Length: 104
Image (tube, rainbow, N blue to C red):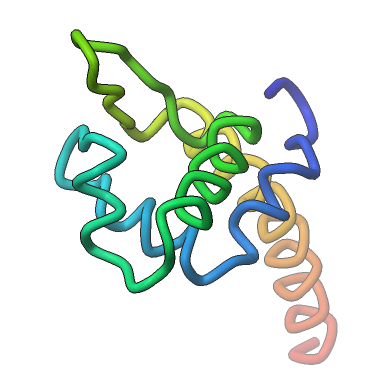
């Protein structure tokens, strides 16, 4: 994710269930079954949410035997945070400049 984040990242983060899945994965990798057990949604619905998160690059998978483990892709989050901080930094400078003009 060089430069601007893929729009799929924002779409993936827009859903409350997907944000819940990401929150769950903060504690470490989980199987799809472990993830599904934590939500009231049906298995196909959770599977679709996981596919969206994977397509956006927010999670990575690793097969271990018959299980698929999902894990946060922290590099995508780091890139996203840097992108968002770039929005804030110029606004801070402009705000400081306005305050200086008002104080003068």
